[in-house]
Image (cartoon, rainbow, N blue to C red; front, top):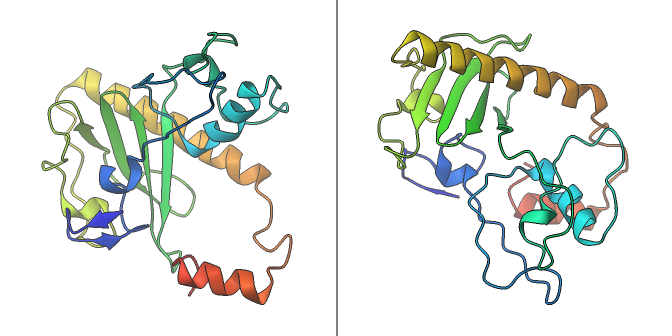
Length: 204
């Protein structure tokens, strides 16, 4: 949730860490190790496979997320996850006119605006969250609340190549996700559900 850190409030406004950095807290006596802290980055796609892993079940074939249960299980059982895999975030303006992606691979985050075909519109912005956790070096333009984005700041050729590789991975992952997405109205919502969604800010 944003509280004005980069000129925005509430959520679904930007790809800054105040909106993306959500702690995942698990409590499951006898299954999840008490007091264990894991610094690995996870995405929403990892939630369901991890819960299935804690239940001792395999995720269905084709699911994109990782099973992170071995990191928190008290017995340490389960397959070791790929912690080197980036985490993708996607932001689409409410009117659908502009979109951004952020791809995070500790300690870096790469942010870029995409055109309608999913191609980068400018050089990516590279942020080092270890040295700049508050993202003070980022221009306001990486969020719809700000001005037009500035070109990225990859400091050398290797950094630029690494950033381009991450953006390429992210755009492919986004396209694959769209190919399997279910229609938004696959199951009609009741008036009560719509009222709750409006109250929570997900519907107008």
